[in-house]
Length: 120
Image: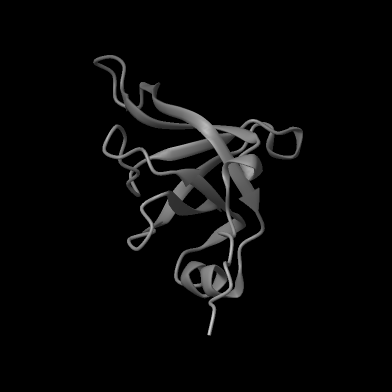
């Protein structure tokens, strides 16, 4: 019996939206002075969070949630929940999302799924 080839759900052609990962750090001696530091910029597939992602987000108070898929950087950059994301799309202008969860594709090592939430 021949096995049918199943193409991957995500491929490079779907990564069309620019995103930037960054963190905030102190910029001066005064408390509350923070400066944005860019960590990594790439293209991503942006889509509404699935039911699985929404269950995860139920433990965190968020106003808005979105899920992105990026190409695995193979160690060049590692996404953590201490980072923030800005999506360069007119629908997300001025919004800076918190990284809530990171899922690595262990079997394929091609893509990383990142769940983002806009905390209230």
